[in-house]
Amino acid sequence: MNYKKIRKDNYTLHLINTDRFKRVDFVIRFTKKYNKEEACYYKLLERVLAFNGTKKYKTVKDLSKRLEYLYNTSLGFSFFTSSKNMVFEVNMSLVNPKYVDDFNIEEAIDILREVLVSPIVKDNKFNEEVFTLEKDNLIKSIMNVKDSSESYASIKFDEVFFNNTVFAENNYKNIKLFEKLDNETLYEKYRMLFDSFKIDAFALGDVEDEEITESIDKLFKGFSESEDYSKDLYVDLKTSFSESKEEFNTSQSNLILGATFDKLTDEERDYKLVLFNTILGCMNNSVLFVNVREKHSLCYTIGSTINRFTSSIVISCGINKKNYSKALFLIRESLESMKDKKVIKPLLTNAKKTLEISYNDFYDNAKKIINYYYANEFTYIPSIEDRRERILNMTEEDVMEIANKIDVKTIFLLEGSINEED
Image 1 (cartoon, rainbow, N blue to C red):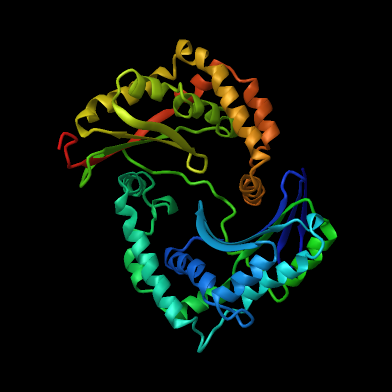
Image 2: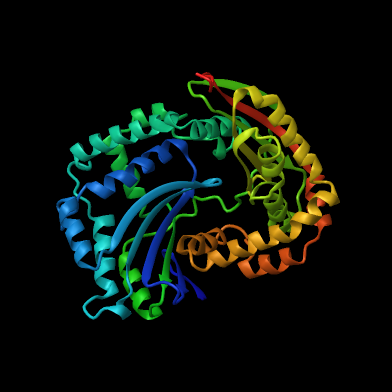
């Protein structure tokens, strides 16, 4: 796999040449500093652009037929947050021209530009019927988060643990903002994509650089970039200790615990924390799985995840509410046991093998590859090979070093109000 970065006047081109995929992926990411009011509009825009129609392709059916004719080329939109920034993404996946005779990339890129810059607009508004329908559908999908106790528990926990940061924001919390969205303002926010965002274009696949570069230059004709984005993605959490519960109409309860790490060095955050988390809660014989689920049968599921930008870890498990105190005790006990060399030593080899498998998967996952090079636009992320080598040589003491820096900050229980016996 070869990577080349080309800085253009109005965007940055990332060429990722690899022969591991039969298709070519184009991804455009528009990045801007997070604003929750604007974020609501871009969350709706990902739906409206997909169904609005364009000057050339009046209906979704017209566009779908053309994409299908071009060997099932796919086109999509999505919106997400990335630490202090928000990102509007356009993605296209198409057959590699090397495998067919009557197809060229330029035609596909022309369609992408058509959909992106030439939607049907009247009086500075998108199709009113599409706008109303997709706004209603979006609000319904946001409200449906309460259909999943696990998802609802997660957003309620985040509001406490990540208080006063972008990580505490969620669509459900901001539902009143979605209800106030109007079509004319949506069009204004859409127009900002072309002059108010940092623009990154990724081309991944086994294709000729020159052909791609010329096509993408045409795609961004008339675009300009803005510096209105955060170059520092790291957040200093100011969370005080809290323990809280919220009742929920379900049989299963969800226990979530959040902890921070005191003054991690770059090496600790980039390497040691990853190994620590794998041993704690990311493999089938992890400390949490064995202690809480296997030995005591106190939970349905349990695992841990880390957030590098806040130097934090979150432990989640599904339990019966009567097991709350015991499960919490065992989780704390598990964290304490990570300081014990006798606990870490027999798990170290398996943890390194687990990470090795994960690193091997990287090269077969287009999204992971693109995410890696995108993240490096803002901060240093070690390469897979660097992580592989460094973690391979780590010891029990490296893991114990991280365990000695952990501080539990937030305990949240979404308490099921329905007894399992019922």
